[in-house]
Amino acid sequence: MSAGMPALSHEEQQLAADRIHELMAEGMSSGQAIMLVAEEIRATHKGESINVSFDDEDDDETRVPFEDVSEEEDE
Image (cartoon, rainbow, N blue to C red; front, side, top):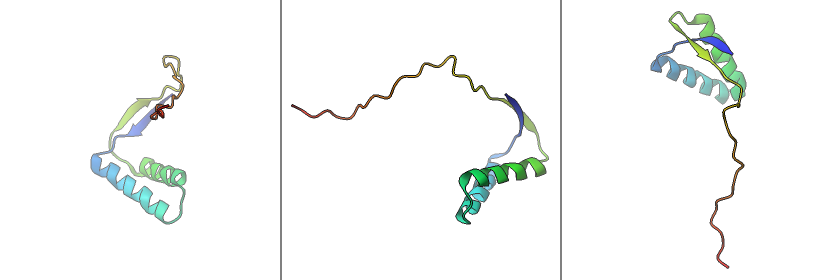
């Protein structure tokens, strides 16, 4: 999957994060807040965009089962 995303400066990223936190403090879920802020950015952003590719395939990854490595009790 490929998408054009707004290229945000560090300051713009911080403002977006602050806005998300404000919405969550008002009772909005994190997912809804992120979606709303992303829509606002897409609607108002006038700067550059970057191409981003998302690879949802795990073909090259080998998954290792979780092992409990907590300290074992001495017998």
